[in-house]
Length: 519
Image (cartoon, rainbow, N blue to C red; front, side, top):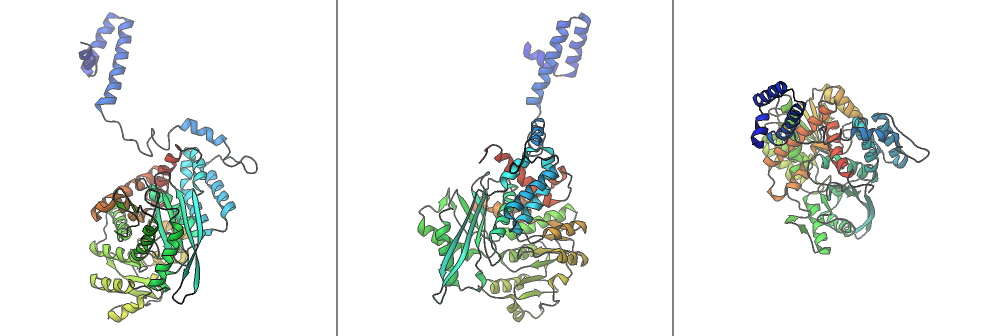
């Protein structure tokens, strides 16, 4: 009878009938029973009748708005206590204080300071809504571990050579460290720290349990023989092995580090260690080398689809000729776009009618030889133009994919691309667009795909393991892109993927850090 009574209350007709009966009896106790029963019924219906809204990083009951009243008290706490208590009143003021602290500690590391400054200004709205996150950001700016070591090796003439090796393990809040290795003359402590800091947000926004790490060395792999690179990699791994391993830290391919380098590194690793895999997942596997480039193009596809457009027929300027640049070109061809260029230290080649599958294979064959320059391609092509025009940015295009060195696209380059009718710049390399150029792209209305977002393809595929396919990668790219887009809109930055990516990645890492205490 009681169950039947409660079910009757859950209907409008039943509640109306009982209410009418209680009003006629004018019994206060009956009216009180009605009110209590209806309240319980509505709570029951909310709990079991309709599914609750799924919590996200941005919902009122599960994210940046959580414990808002308590968080206001954090503004009364000093963010720094170095020379007297330093507090903040606004989110922007908190961001500026954090940047000033980074400058005080590491003013000589320009790349790192640029990353911190750009990121903290993106996070200012979070600090405004929930000041507690400013204290988490202060904690996050300092890496958990930064290892620098010497790498001695013998060249082909028997002379002792010396390079610096690095591995920065920035955050393990979400899971084991994971991140790229970079070999090149541009690698130094500042660039490694900058890339490591960015990888925290990049790996965080994927939704997988990935920590963040980056490493490398200041060796130039392109003017060395194969034997010299092998000896160098063995020496580098002999020291690095102390800090990496399955379920600890997974190095992946990066600038100047391809399948051959990863193979040499793994060979030395397994000479020293017995355990070389975990849960059937191979360690230091060179598989899915095309994943970073494919991921870049899938993001470009999502960005264009948002504007009701597609890659079909788009003329694409590719800067670089490494493994990522060539996999970008391959995926562009599959989706109907027209790659126009490649470039390296010798200059650039330009095919006015586009680079087809046959031409791409020829270029890949040339570039797969260590130290080979792109200029050799003009011997195999009657239509290619070499360093004509003198600047690759003078070539009219619809999209630009910078896949080469850091800071390739500066303010002058961004202005030239906009003047030539380019509609978007999608980073296929790490930090290829400078902060000033980023502002120009936004001001001129060009689409911009930041590397924090577009270079997540490798992390996604590694997390999926050997079962990963290009279709699965495309599906995950769509999921991540929609999440970043929604986050940007939530924080009044509609269409700003750079801000959306940094906020999404930060919130996921920061929410985990809040549970870990002062570590």
